[in-house]
Length: 117
Image (cartoon, rainbow, N blue to C red):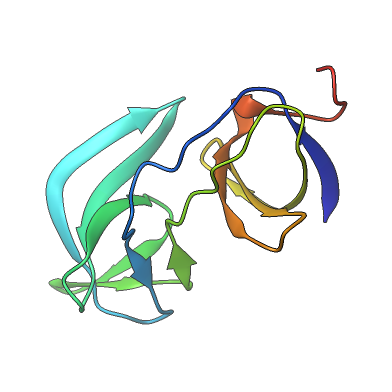
C-alpha cells in the first residue's frame, strides 16, 4: 500500500453498490461505458444488485458469465487534503483506505502523491 492525497473532493455515487464473489455467476447487459479509456459493463449479481464492473472482471463459459475475482463497487467519499492508502488500482480508479478505516474506490484523477498535487 502507498500513501496518496485527495486533491479533489469525491462523493460516492451509489448507496448500495454491486459486489461479487469470485466464481459468482453474473448477468451482463448490453450497456457499456468508456470511462477514461477503460471499458465498464453494467452487470447484475445473484442478489439482484446492479452496477458497473470493469470489463476485465469476468469470463464467459459457454452462455454463462462468471466473476474472476471478488469485487465491490463501493466508492469512498473523501475531501481534498485527506490522506489515504492506495490498496489496488484498475480502470482509472484506486481502491483506498481512509484514516478512519473506510475502504472504497476513488477516481485516480482525484488523487496525488503529494498533498499539494
